[in-house]
Image (cartoon, rainbow, N blue to C red; front, side):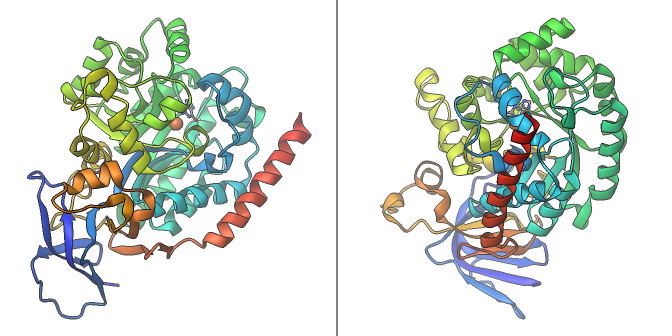
Length: 445
Ligand code: GUN
Ligand code: FE
């Protein structure tokens, strides 16, 4: 479809001027071609009636794990290291190609249905090619990579890999998938966290990331026990260690960052490192409340992510936005995290974190057409009269209000129906896959 015209919508642009306008949007191929009142266009393949609808940039989630979606509900009420060792690693070790594929599609269906149009995804040790295949067919914009873990205690045999293998497989995947579909998909090196990686591996990742100019995506300073282990092993604070390894730069995306001291915040700021804030996961794993107002005060890049299904247990950006705002208020005051700040983190902030600030994250002529159409005409979002649309989006709206989603100019969901993913097949195969995996684990133990 080469031309799509959205007519007479309320458009929350998230541009520099924070403009909210009532107008038409013309999409041609993958880009926003024109924005204006009463556009006259010939040869339009598709006209969408935008009256009484609100159009916003699609959400950019900068930390998810598609490979973990099948584990939803199987790892509740645990702290990070127990959660990993007793549930997540054994489950990741039980994946096969088919289960990985349906885990990814289940997550992608949920993400697209709840308005996310771009993700930064961390996979498991094996079968990452299947996640890329699912990402490719879903139409979502993504950075993804196989997890790298060449050391650690209590790691199941199936997840143990040598440094050489980890690097070779990462590079092979990068060469196959980086810039697939004109750059819609990108590779990101994904060392799991410092505890899982040798210094040799992390140094090599630093070198490869600069030579290929690709991002590095890892977990950091999520949990007090984790930073203590890092300090014991390296003699350094987590972020200082990453900086010592020359990983701290604008290509680095750090999930969590709950436990930082001032020096670490300073390094993150000076090096232009990006923080992916995961409020739902940080609460559910009892990790803590990240000091986001103090990071924003230092003008550090902060974006949002749901993390994986077994630590949230949803992949819904509306949940994360609401939590990101509310959890700061008791300690830091009611204005410490306002709705506009949160919506920025969820859209343009995420875009900047993945190096696509000029391409996505706001609705502007020339940018890629990644946008969602909301229907805010319901009990829970009314009255609308003279209410700031951003308040309605962040504090009242839910995932069910996302009606249509366009990614890279392509309609991937229309009137809540996914165009790229067959829901009934994915739900059936998700149950079949996890059943097989549980059986495999029980046979091993
Ligand atoms: N730290 C290391 N691995 C993981 C993971 O899979 N999820 C989360 N939340 N933290 C981690
Ligand atoms: Fe995570």
